Image 1 (cartoon, rainbow, N blue to C red):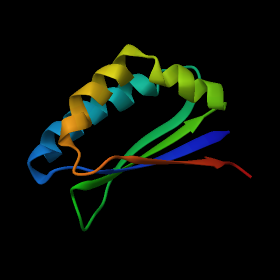
Image 2 (tube, rainbow, N blue to C red):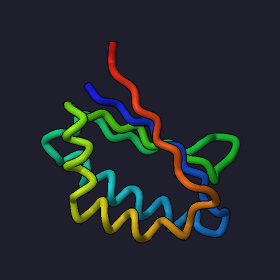
Image 3 (cartoon, rainbow, N blue to C red):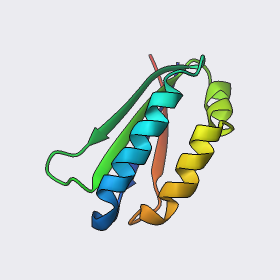
Length: 94
């Protein structure tokens, strides 16, 4: 498995829009054949911070995900909502 944990800090005024757009992306992403799991988490004590927990079958499946229309739409829409660049950290399942 290829696991990516993406940390996102969103501008306070963009939280609601970010949630709506990311839920849409997650609903579409989980339908991809190469995605095993796609969780969208909001920090309990800082609602402007989020985590995307993405589990792919292979690293190539992550690359395929980045080529989908729903991902490209999401990325373009949320770029200006971020308080700082998102941080994706890759892991492998042991």
